Amino acid sequence: MGAGRGGQHGTGAAQGGQTVGARGPQKDEGSVPGADTLEDAIAKVRERLARAGHVAVLTGAGMSAESGVPTFRGEDGLWRNHRAEDLATPEAFARDPKLVWEWYDWRRGLIAGCVPNPGHKALAGLEEREPGLTLVTQNVDGLHALAGSRDPVEMHGNIWKVRCTGCQRVSEDRRVPIPILPHCGVCGGVLRPHIVWFGEALDPGILERAFGAFEYADVALIVGTSGVVQPAASLAGIARRAGAFVVEVNPDAAGDAAAVDVALAGKAGEVLPRLVPD
Ligand code: OAD
Image (tube, rainbow, N blue to C red):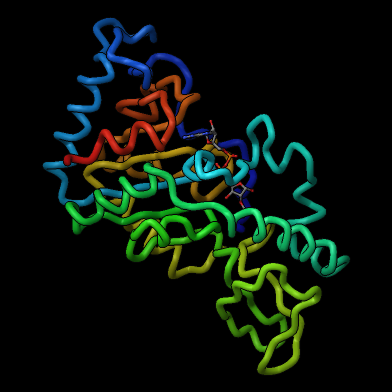
């Protein structure tokens, strides 16, 4: 991840914007006079989506929370109980590959029992109707593809892929549990998770697709991310500055008018299905 990764960079959710609760319809209790009801805001977003040539979606851990995949920074978030430096850095893997693999093996076992939620399915449905949609995810769980999204841009890799530390070959590996340490079938080198760890660079091709999608988006949806990890955290701002209509979906969204046009304060699995026409 590049130099900025881990920097405190927000996608929004402060004061002043238009926030609409997901339990509506009710009048917004946020600070914008005359803010829409949830129904109105959803209708507005649907209308924007219908007119959009290009739609860019960024998802984070909150997207999979309703599927049972833990987030990183929430109440029971993974980084509340584990130190990222011990488990998700190249230095940690060099120091203790067994410990790192044990943690990933635990996460793989957990994710193996999870299925896509209505929010994942709604985004796959939206893609059917919007051929110009690019789905960018920070999630490594593979649930977007399971829900039917065709080619999600996985910024941080995929937990079901491994990479050889010797020959660099990337392959799919769905073994649960995985033998620790796993070895490459081609060269015998030690395998590592195909995940972008703190301090590592993102794949340039992946970055180009992600940034390109947000630069050219007419509508950008930012779903279930705390917006603190770069470079993903800058995508909403890039879209906004280029003139996109930016929508945030997050139960903690508070609507920062400088960062988003509409903040829908609700769960991805409840709000996203309402954005997609029947
Ligand atoms: P975080 O755990 O930082 O943030 C999760 C966000 O999801 C929070 O803003 C929650 O309010 C929101 N949320 C919780 N439940 C939700 C729901 N049902 N619907 C919608 N939103 C909900 O996760 P990320 O922002 O994805 O990197 O974290 C970014 C990166 O940090 C991860 O990709 C990971 C981590 O270090 C790697 O592991 C490479």
